[in-house]
Amino acid sequence: MKTYKQINERIESGKAVVLTADEIIDYVDKKGLAAAAKEVDVVTTATFGPMCSSGCFLNFGHSKPKIRMSEALIQDVLVYTGIAAVDVYLGATQLRHGDPANMYYPGEFRYGGGHVIEDLIAGKSLQLFALSYGTDCYPLREIRTYFTLHDLNQAIMVNPRNCYQNYNVAINNSDRTIYTYMGRLEPNRKNANYCSAGQLSPLLNDPYYETIGVGTCVWLAGAHGHVYSEGTQHAGQCKRTPGGVPTGGAGTLALTADMKQMKKEFVRGVSFPGYGVSLALGVGIPIPILNEEILKRTCVRDRDIVAPVIDYSSDYPQNTGKTVCQVNYEQLRSGEIEIDGKKVQVGSLSSYYKALEIANLLADEIRRGDFQLVKPIAALSKDEAMKPLVKRKQT
Image (cartoon, rainbow, N blue to C red):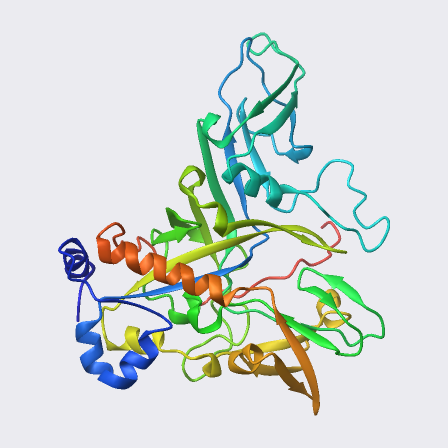
């Protein structure tokens, strides 16, 4: 048994043994679970892919004269102004003003909130246009100006739902091409798409939320942030494999970090034809090896993780709850799965290569003593199921 304090002391002294979730599997096979648990202090996990439920709070400071922004756009992308005078919230999936969306189906969705966030972190100069109804204390009614990330007082990424523990594999049973947030799906099961780093993914290495919880320090696009809550749609009560791995979406994390510390290569605006815009993010989370059981769970392999195959032409949009079948991530990462005897080509919206890069970058920071671990101040729920939106008459 180890404690957070003991592990952090080893980090401070430069003696911590840190391995990635990719490396730990072979290490435990070679050393044995008991010996490895004594030697290894931290296992780093990571993921990189689209995370639609993301966004940021920005503070512009006050102009002369002052303005209370009641409407505002950045690069013609609408931001939310229903907070203090010069605070705004920019959502990753917000479309650019005037975007025809799916009027000419499938829409292109060339630019939106996720792209603004990418450009901001890349250091580009962006246009702010804001209107106000005017008040005695905030008399200015209109302002147009340009700014960069470092002109802002604060730029805080605040993401309500990131790092899905597991996720669907999307197919299309219909006879027409469909366009979804899981990408383009060809008719009659000609292709399938998935989105997870599998055995590298944070919550798949901590399936019962023993070390990842509220207050856990995370590596968010290069910045040091933390989990501020369970994520929206978090549903720890779910079907699991004998090894504890959820067989569906299950857990999520709400994450925050300072955008001024982020690295542009781990933040990317994403366009999904026929669907909309999003933001691809890189996230790394360290798992302290407090005991053998925690270490054992970090040895999860792609072949141990199963995901549900869902028909996005009917069952997903109609919320039927039906699953075509289940496949494991070893099969998915091979680029081909078999459904009802038919071979189906598979693509990934998540980058295993980038996730592995992040896991190694985080491991290096910990070895240098630049990143320490924090014990969660509250656990994530394991007995909460997701509720549907039900149409009801007023009572």
